[in-house]
Image 1 (cartoon, one colour):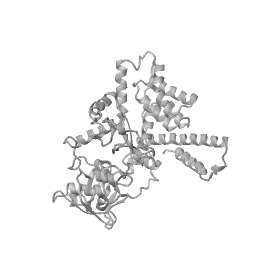
Image 2 (cartoon, rainbow, N blue to C red):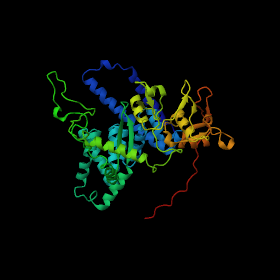
Image 3 (cartoon, rainbow, N blue to C red):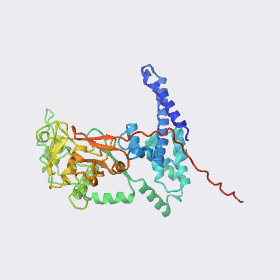
Image 4 (cartoon, rainbow, N blue to C red):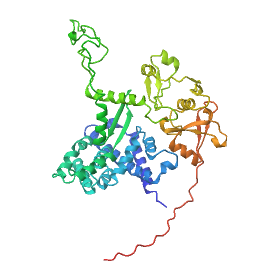
Length: 462
């Protein structure tokens, strides 16, 4: 039976850190403030190092899956209170530092931060799969942290120089074989993530191989070409651009395009045009029949908003399945060329009636489920509808009907879970929303682990 050494250490650390809650920070002055910041930074690094170790164990044991979480990443995001995907960052650092013991040891000792460990492990993962080269680069980067106090940004910028210093002749990184290793390493490190910034925008981060990036750029560049018009076609007068009268007011006619000089040139810089090209490419793809259908419908943006708010309100917001909101003006713009599905909601937002495309409950019921549940209805899960199924509460084989009162939105992971475990779900007759009943607790106090004896290996012969 495993001794609870780590759990005891965690409890002791939590009890000790609880003393920070009553600390009077106003008493700090001069060097004491600096010393407190250094100690707290070291404490945070120690906690992050422990979290990485726990993330590795969560992945190895499947403990989060066993109690109903879709993944260890989701569980870690929930318990740490980070942004969506924060748990995935811990898991990635755990996976990529498993082959970099020096980095893992430095993180566990609080000598580097989670951000520094993430940069080192991510950049090393893109190198050729030469264990000696990877370990050497990692140790060199750790040396820069120790000697020159490089932060995560400094480390990210200097990786190329460090590799060149270690491989001056390009024998490892410069050969065709190593180039193939590099490309495969980059392919394994590819990702794309979207993080709302709570200011009406979304931060996008990603990583790709040169080949994939070139494909994306090749497709976007024609759509990103500057849009040139005749001077003054925007509504402004190019002859008066930048001129003001004695009172400081602009002279001449203006136009609604910010930054426009009225000369007919495209005011968008290259980055803006590339993003607009990506959006335009997605619009064109959505208009074709090449995208896979989801529950009988093509890819679509689902926004929930009251009819009165849509038609007249200025300060109302439309609700996206992710929980983010759009302004009324944006929803009206989307509604200009969108399919509007009428729905009747009760005072608590429960779905009472939905327009159906046919007598059978197909697309209409699916739209009702999305409107009611918004995402996977399992506690703590926010998988979007595109990754969900409509689950029959009373199974179809047992006589259950395909109706809104007998359906709940579940992601594939939790759809499988509810068929295999004692978890139960019902629809509350008052709110008409899903209510979950967890399985009864299991008393495992009397259980123990048993491992049969293994035969000894034969002695080595010189």
